[in-house]
Image (tube, rainbow, N blue to C red; front, side):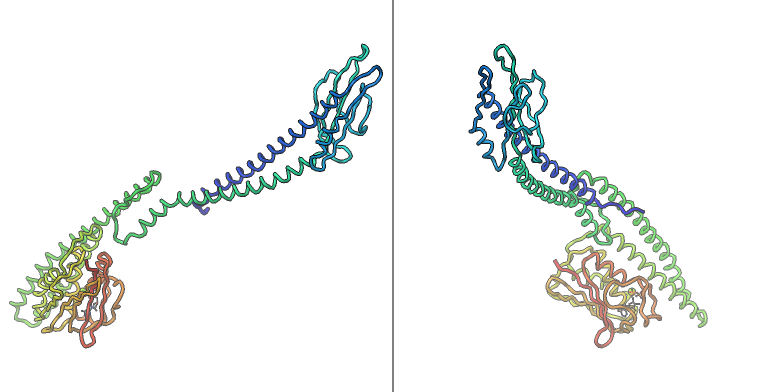
Length: 458
Ligand SMILES: Nc1ncnc2c1ncn2[C@@H]1O[C@H](COP(=O)(O)OP(=O)(O)O)[C@@H](O)[C@H]1O
Ligand SMILES: [Mg+2]
C-alpha cells in the first residue's frame, strides 16, 4: 500500500512551490522593468541626438551643411565606456560618418524616428534614424541621419540589477519559506493538541473529548466521541452482565452453603461430614470469587465516572475494619486500627473504590493469618502522601511480585490450602491507578506480610 503523505508535506509543498514561482517572477519582472527603463533612457538620448543633427542641417544651392552637435555626442559618450557612431545619407547615398553602419531601409514617406538594434563591428548597437524630405530649388531631397550607441552601460546596469534582484528574490524565498513553516506549524497545532489530549488520558478515562476545537476538526471530535460513547455502552453492558451474573451465582450458593451447614450439624457419619466440609469449602471459594468479580466490575464501572470527594481517611478505614471484623472473628483474629494525627487526614477519592481497595487488603490479611492473631491497620503521613499499612502475622508472601501492577488470577505459591481467586491485588492495582496512588506488598522483618497503599492527601 502507498504510504500516506503527511499533512505537513501536503501543506508545505504547494507553499514552497508558490514561493519559488513568486520569487522567480519577482526576479524576472525587476530585470525586465530595469531593462526597459534603461533602453527608454538610451532611446531618448539617441532621439535627441538625431533631431539635433536634423535641426542643424541646412541646404544651400548645391550643398548641404550639417553641424554635428558635439555636446550631445559628448553626453552620449560620457555614459560608461559607450561608443557613439553616426551616418548621414542624402537621397539614399552615403554622405558622411561611418559607412559600414547598417541602415534600415525606410520608405520615403517615413518621417519619423525609427529605433533598431544592429551588430556593428561585432558589437551590439542601438540606433535611432530620422529622415526628412527637403524641397531645394523645386527638387525634393531626402536626408537620413542615424546615430548609434553601444550598450555597455545598459549591460552593466542589468548585471548589477540582476545581482540585486537575485538577492531580493532569494531573501523573499527565505522569508516565504519561514512563513510557510510557521503556517504549517500553526495549522497542525490543534491536531497535535487534540491527539495530546486523547493520548494523555488514563486507560479508564472514557469521558467525551471536550475543549476548544477548530470547526474543521469538529467532525473528527464528534466521531471520536461517538465511538467513545459506543465503547462506554458496550463496557457498561459487559459490567452489568458480570455484576448480575455474580449476583445470580452468589444467592443460590449462599443457600447451598447454609443448607450444607445445616446438614453438617445434623450429620453423624464422619464420611458425610467430610463430604459436606468439602462442599462448604468449595461454595465458599465460589462465593468469594463471585464477590471479587463483582468488585472488579464495580471498579471498572466506577473508573469511568469517578465520584471524587474529600474523605476523612480515619472514618473510611474504621468503617472497613468494622465491616470485616465479623469475618475476622471466625478465626478469632482482632483488627487493631491506629489512628494518628487525631484522624485529621483527608484524601480526595471515590469512597466506594477506596473501600474496595482497603477491603481487599484486609481480606488478604485475615485469609493468610493464623487463628488468634492480630492485624494492625496504621496510617502514616509523609509530606503530601498518606500510607495506609495493613500488617499481619500470617504466613507471608511467596511467589508474588511485591511492586507494580498485579495481574489477575495470579496467586502465591504458599496458598494452595486457602481459597482465593487471585483478583484482589489486581483490583487494588486498578484502584491505585484511578486514585493516583501506589501499592506495595512485602514481607515483614519477622513474620507475616505488610500491604501498603499510598495516596495523595488533600
Ligand atoms: N497478607 C498476605 N499474606 C500473604 N500472602 C498474601 C497476602 N496478600 C496477598 N498475598 C499473596 O498474593 C496473592 C494474590 O492475592 P489476591 O490477588 O488477593 O488473590 P487471592 O487472595 O484470592 O489469592 C495471594 O494468592 C497470596 O499469595
Ligand atoms: Mg485476596
